[in-house]
Image 1 (cartoon, rainbow, N blue to C red):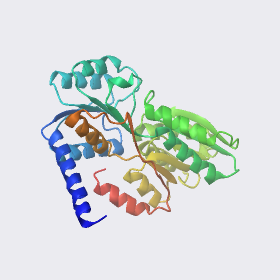
Image 2: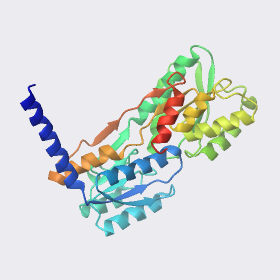
Image 3: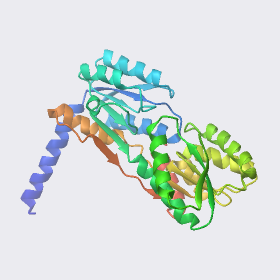
Image 4: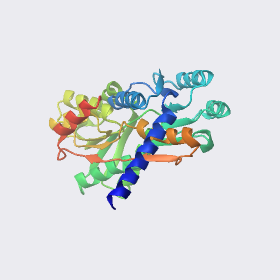
Length: 321
């Protein structure tokens, strides 16, 4: 490409980016967040606020404290205020059709962040999320390779009952271990995505499984529950990461700190930057009505102690986790 063509392309990109920014600048967006049940959730909130500020978007924030009724109330409040768009991280998958219909009738686009809903697709503009089934599958594939042909009884810490990550991460993990008869899920219970509940449930698992001696691995649907489980394993006089393998999902700083200490074995990354792709899609829509892809998938990546956990910890702490 010659210099004239290169300059033309750069100018075109600059014009497009300026146009997108202009389309969003001054917009008022109402963000309905689940709560702050985990380090990852806090990072998502922080990144969303940063992305909004960089784009000149006025962000109205509502913390639902992990209650769907609070989210529905907040969304109706945003509709009454006639905001330009409503990103929502839904606490559970069901029970959204009425309020999403209200938003559509008010001509306010709704964008789903990191979780899906059981509702007609025409009720929301787009859904920005990871492939949660793949996340569970990657975690399961790691365990299959790690244990080889040795017998392995797994205990599972599920996320919030009825949430799409809990449903999908369980499905993916089970798909990965299917056909490997040496690996069985001995116990499975919700830890509600929280560190305290993860510790409490893991304590029960340990008592039920011969003081933990019969447990080969714990699979947690998020890192915060895994960190809670690590504490329970240590309190039981066992070595997490050695006596009981620990695999989880999110890639928050504390799981990398656990890897540095030899207490965690694997995590699958879930990026907290759902807002960037969401706001890009919204900019195009506000500019000229361009409909985005209905599902925008973010990348998932496996991390183990071989992947510079100290460096990953430092980097993520710098991003506001």
